[in-house]
Amino acid sequence: RIRVMGEAAGHKYDSDGPFIVHRDDRKMEWGSDGENNYSGWMTVEPTVTASTVTVHLSFNPKPELAAAFKEQTGSRDKTIRSGLTAALQSIKNLIEGDGDKVLTPADTTNGKPNS
Image (tube, rainbow, N blue to C red; front, side):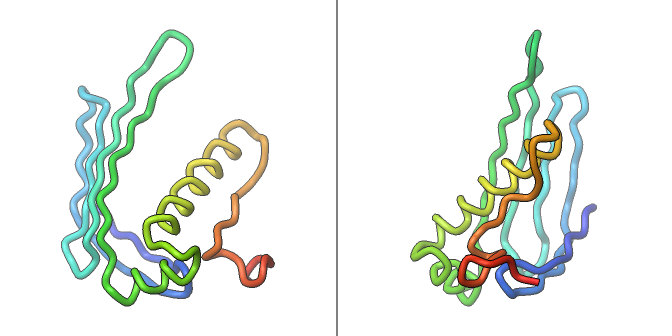
């Protein structure tokens, strides 16, 4: 099982659910049991010089959270995609030593980082 706690876009979250690793298939699966409705899986396919990572996410936020997402960028889906893109770029930056966390609209107010 996995428990995820934090805050995003001014909303606190605390959720838990299954976390399954299929080592032989290089696959992980996760999800939530409670009020938050999300799940996903990730596979890693190695090649000679690199690896390809495929991530599938299913996310259906509660109506009040979906409304907050829509306020940030004008679209719930655009806000979710923006957050995922920033998270992946942040991971890449840290792994490659080329930078730090990429900020999203949820991380800023009037273009300035939230404290």
